[in-house]
Image (cartoon, rainbow, N blue to C red; front, side):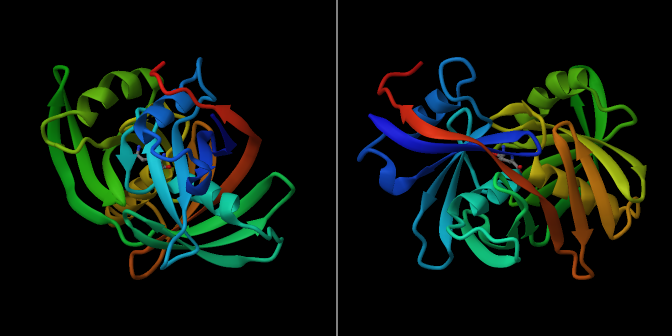
Length: 272
Ligand SMILES: N[C@@H](CCC[C@H](N)C(=O)O)C(=O)O
């Protein structure tokens, strides 16, 4: 069985995109996702999105993490999704809306060159559950904020985010009893009021090069604490996003969506 796909990336967060109408009938989606996202035996990606027809938006985005679990929303993913469903790319700004499990998301897209679009996404308002709480993991204690930005995010401020911390502490917090549905975990450093740095451990995908909802959550918390201005550049390991915080607290995330390749995935029914 061959399934047409496009592989794309948004600041290093990489995704496979497919259309529901091109999937074989009765396919077991979690197995397809795990197999196709496998870095050695598959195409390799942090997540897979299926484009489905929508009665209330330009399309519905069904997002899956690389472990096969469902995510309600994906910030870097939705920029790629918008480019994927954009049938007439143009250098002029075009408005689109995408249905997700976190609601209908509005965005503006403009094509930058043949492989890349710039997409500004209205991420909506964050739900900040706590600005300051303490969690103990691995014999260490961390101060954290907890936010829902479509998906759940823990935000930890640290002077030196590093891969060791992301990979050791991230998985323990992801599955901690405080978060029965699991959580994404962001380690961030505020360089100044206009520049921040974020590294993320993603629920269902592990250490990725960037997380759009994570970066947006960090800005929401940092802005609430008076640490950043209304416009912030945020660096992740795979690139940079621009975040604007509106007077009504909505956050606008702007960044690229880039094609990597397209082709046909040879699907197998067994697990890798
Ligand atoms: N990469 C994403 C977030 C994807 C979903 C997340 N791992 C979850 O299940 O909560 C982003 O860019 O926002």
